[in-house]
Length: 192
Length: 98
Image (tube, rainbow over all chains, first blue to last red; front, side):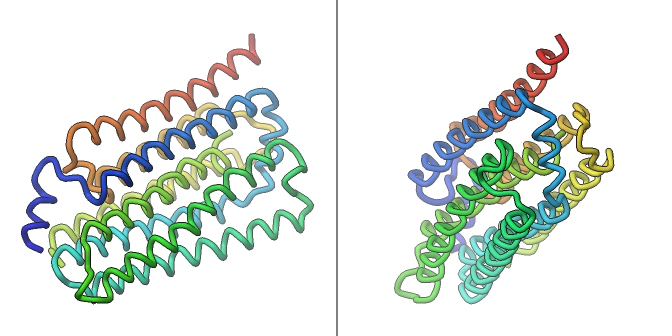
């Protein structure tokens, strides 16, 4: 484990499977495409977007961002603990990450429910179509993230498995959910 | 757990949370006026977001130790995303004024 730790500190170490990184880069550019389409449409009717955006809660958006950032922190600690052979601690951090992910999930569903109750659905207007599309596709990635974390937990639970590479791969995926949300938050909730 | 790495992760997390709170403040500066296009708020919001993403890449995802190709690819994505989003926004503003 110390060897893996040293390798991580030296230059040229890719955490996790390179295939996951290829996926992350691909997904990131795909999301940039969605974001640019959103921005182009937004410039066509800025008043509509600003009025609709005012119906979202900036505080809930901020809370969701803080929750995902905290989940990223805990999964980073999970990787570090696994590297050092502290598997119980790594397992605890993996469960914590799942917990924060679950808080985000509940918060997001309740936010959708509130917006729908106020009468703002997918087809209300263009802004809300983007809002539901971007948050739902992100939500789908979050659900896949729970399966990925399940694999991490499965790896950590038995001494016979414990592949550090798979733990790092799972963490790389989870961080991707986090940083994509950071951009979504700025575009849907904060910008004017 | 390695104390120095643990502390580094803690500082990174605190910094990310702090700039998120700055985003909340920036987003509230205009009192959430429905009709107000505001280039300063937009630039700050997108600027803060891409800085956060780069910190997540480099610190949490450990790209700072990665081969140069991965470092360049992630930086390129951050740059392309920031430029295309702000470029589209300001092109739209210029078009609506002109």
